[in-house]
Image 1: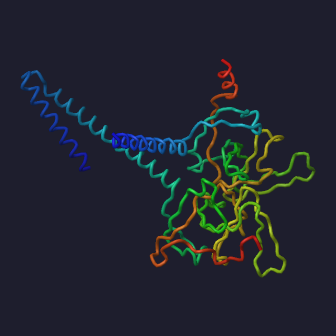
Image 2: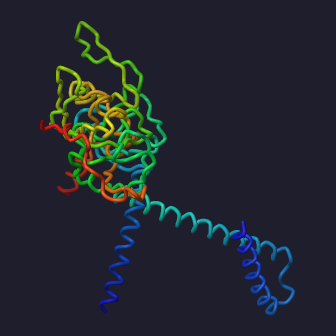
Image 3: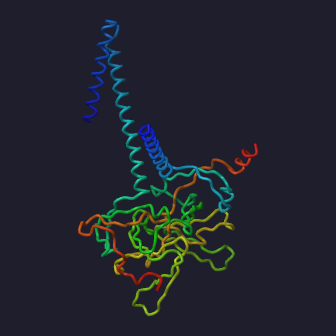
Amino acid sequence: MLRGVLGKTFRLVGYTIQYGCIAHCAFEYVGGVVMCSGPSMEPTIQNSDVVFAENLSRHFYGIQRGDIVIAKSPSDPKSNICKRVIGLEGDKILTNSPSDFFKSHSYVPTGHVWLEGDNLQNSTDSRYYGPIPYGLIRGRIFFKILKRFSKVLIWLSEA
Amino acid sequence: MLYLCIEILTAIKRNNVQMHATTFRNLGNIMPGQWWQSLHRTMLRGVLGKTFRLVGYTIQYGCIAHCAFEYVGGVVMCSGPSMEPTIQNSDVVFAENLSRHFYGIQRGDIVIAKSPSDPKSNICKRVIGLEGDKILTNSPSDFFKSHSYVPTGHVWLEGDNLQNSTDSRYYGPIPYGLIRGRIFFKIWPLSDFGFLRDSPNGHRFSDD
């Protein structure tokens, strides 16, 4: 009986590992569903929107200006950020606010990208921490699934 | 190719056996055209089925292997002179990826990271400073010592071969998120088999 139980446990663990690995690879190389939080991409992406991110562009180095990307935060490796790509390597970026008298600009170094949120007044992005290395980009957001996912959750819990 | 031929022959044999059985039962009811059609269908289905199963197994084991390399570790070949004498050109080392996920990288570890100037390649350097550490950023021959602090979420990397290494002294501190794994064991050449040595440049650590 013990052998039967052990055998069943091992088989279950084996299947879990197998399908876990396949699911992980699917999320890593193809794409997945992501919930964004924060106000820095309004009005394009609101707080608690659910979007679909694809990871193929990153691996084929197909990220372009204007794409909204998910990247690992350079100041906190445990969290992700969601911003728009304003400049690729070699581009000239204006780095001051429009109210300044003297315009200052800088060039994006090789292997880096310049990110900015759509909500410029309320976004911590490359204007604050500088250009980030391309290697930190995780995926590209291209499709919104649900507006205000938190509203759906609240409605479900009240019903 | 050979496998395909064997497959076709077995399909024919299977079909022949079936044909014999049905012929005995209803003689003359089966036209030669129908026989060819059913033979083709069986063969095609068999071959397609085997191909799909092969592709399925490949994807399955490919994913498991990828996850093993990504989350546990793997064998890496290093090239370049920037980590001599600890790691020579064309040495084969063993890298583990668990420390990165548990944020256990420490000062003095040799890490593999994605290069900040070229996302397609990897670099292999030693961690000199973690976030908040004070780093001496000039060469020892300069009169005025200049230092800087490593920002949060970043690490300061330097190669062991200071004269011949492009590292954080050139491109600045790199974000922790670029680190891929930690090297801790050398496999080849066998004369140098074993755990890796400490940095030969001990005085570069930030506590001075």
